[in-house]
Length: 60
Image (cartoon, rainbow, N blue to C red; front, top):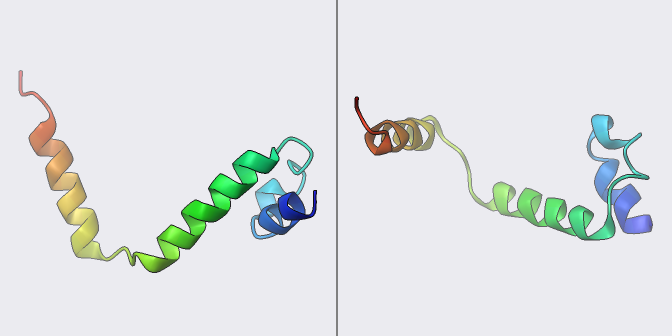
């Protein structure tokens, strides 16, 4: 329960969802947050991702 409170305390919207947030999901959320901190998202990364998505769409 302490881990769930620790993770959900970082997000104001999740404070009331603490009783619905499972331990496994709290660990997954923490893992994603740690990974996001290590990988900076720059404008060029966003532009590249958008371009890749546009290239993958089939044109009709």
